[in-house]
Amino acid sequence: MAEVLASGLWWLHGTRGSNVFLVEAANGERALIDSGFASSAGAILEELREIGGELSAILLTHGHGDHAGAADAVRSATGARVFASRAECTESDGKMVLQTAVARTRIGKRAFALAGRRSATGGLRIDRAFEGEGEVLPGIRAVPVPGHTPGSVCYVVDRLGAAFVGDLVISHEGTLTRAMRMANHDDAEYLESIRRFAAGAPETGFPGHGTPLLTGFGGALRELGALPRRRPGFAILWERATRMFRFGRQMSRPRA
Image 1 (tube, rainbow, N blue to C red):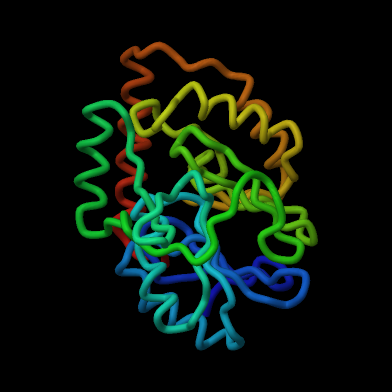
Image 2: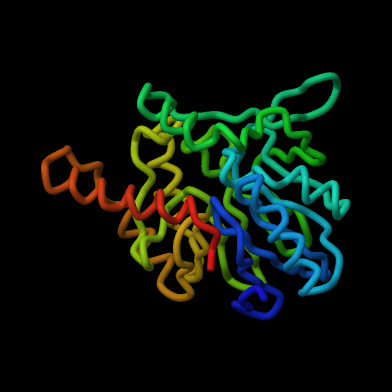
């Protein structure tokens, strides 16, 4: 059974890729926030059956395969609508479809190609492509945080005082870190998005990868946003390699 983190908030098990959360809007509608790799669809549907109730929406923080891979299969099984930022989409035959953006560096592009080879999301039909900041479901606001991808967003749930932030930051056992430069579409814009969002961030935060922060999220994000990028050195490279190993292990295993 999924973990109940608060009233109307579940953290799903058995998924792979990003964290997958189920949250109730102010009117009782239920929405998934992200969907993990395509292989996560079975675990998501099983846990939705155990929890009960209908799924109304799938809210994507951005279009990478580890966050949006299972969206189409879950939509087909439940009838839920898929939401994403208009900046993450392109128009094809009169319909809005996801346009997967990857890092600009050669190393970053290769890493994303290897990680997403079996879970590409480019061409995923989007039922509602919203623009700018605003309410997407009652009590759930989308806040643009471009940089990791052109249309990355965070979702703020007012009744919980919580933010679901996708890849804006990564939680390593509760310590927040930034996505590496090579993983971002526009690193300067990404760093500015952290600083801008941190200014009004709630104290509960749910990153797309790693452990949720039930307290202290806003303060930790503001501290992180004030830090400059560090110049590479042996100690930093070793730290990053360790983090990448742990991150890769988490990505390759279903969440227990």
